[in-house]
Each structure stands twice: as structure tokens, then as C-alpha cells.
Length: 242
Image 1 (cartoon, helix red, strand yellow):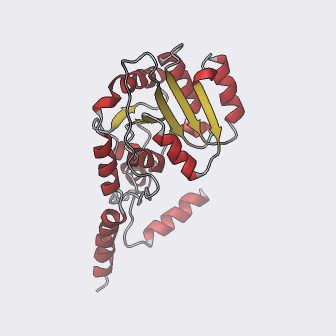
Image 2 (tube, one colour):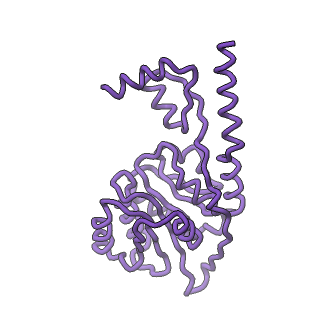
């Protein structure tokens, strides 16, 4: 109740309110009757440049690598990802999953991977510097994160900036920029559909144009693009007072 009262006062005294995603704009409208324009955050992907990748799916020695990045907390649904990965590739050593990040769920997730019989195919890096995050993305062929909620979803943008196609859930922010040309969207918490998406991604990752994915996401979330949109809203607000 206190948070709501503070929010209502802040919104009431604002000349303009900007939402960083369509999902957040919907919540503002539902809870406060506010019609907020959607302007994404600036995504600083300067350290996540495009990286060309090759995958020969015909070779018996070729390995397909998924990477997932996030804090190991319940909201990120890594337990759902492990269930889906085990369902999609129960005994395929040519498909690997790297989970980058640390957090309170680390022990439970490692234990779950062992119980599912996929511990040899899943690597947990723990918390690492951003340069290592980028390098893990460079070593992968696709990005996946099964979050239960994301207001924006910066890590998806970082992965896409390197040229990776992504698998995301319909959890809010990613729905604004993940589409059939750069990835796959699945319902939150649906293990079967996530498993199907993992298989589809492995079989069709070569169809995605990594350079186009990278250039598109950099254009969309650049300081210039977002800055111009914010300046337009600020100019309207100032104009109301002149």
C-alpha cells in the first residue's frame, strides 16, 4: 500500500511518464489508468560486437552450444530450462548448455542437472566478468533464457548484438523485440514448448542472419535512437509550460 501511494503521488505530479516496455505500459494502465508511451532503455552493447559463427550439423563431431545468462534465482526459471533441455536432448552429447551466472539457486540447479542425467552436457560457470559473458556468447550458437518476468531484458539484447538468435519467454520486455527473424517466443513455464523451441533452434539456427540480428538490435537500442525519442517527449512536456 505504501509503494502504491508513493507511485500514485509521483505519477500525479509528472508531466510525462515513459514506460520501457509494452508490458510495463499495460501494467501502468491497468493499475493507475496511465497511458504511457513506450521507449526502451538504451542498451549499451559496445562490448558485445558481432561475431561470426559456423555450425556443421552434418558432421558427427559437430557440437551445438546454447548459452543462458542470468542470476541463479527462482524468477529466471533455470529449473524450467533444465527440464526442457533434458526433454529435448536426453542423451545427445553433441548439444551443450552453458549457464552463466551465480546466485542462491546454484546448488539446487547443479543437483537437478545431475538428477536429470544431463550434468555432463550442462556447464555452470558461476559469476563471471562481463568480458567472460561476451566470450561465452561468442562460443555459442544460440541464446536461451526462460525468465518468468522481465521488465526490459537487457541480456537478450546483448546476446543479439553478438549475432545470436534467441529463445525467450512471453514474460514482458522481450516481446517488444524478439520475433521470427531473430528468435523464438514461448509461453512462461511451459516445459514442452520450450523443449520444442530448443530442438527447432538447433535444427534451424543457420537460417537466422546473425549480422542482421546484430545490426538491427544495435540500431533499435542505440543512444541516438532512444535519445531522440526521449527528447521528443521532453520537448512536448516543456512545450506545455510555455
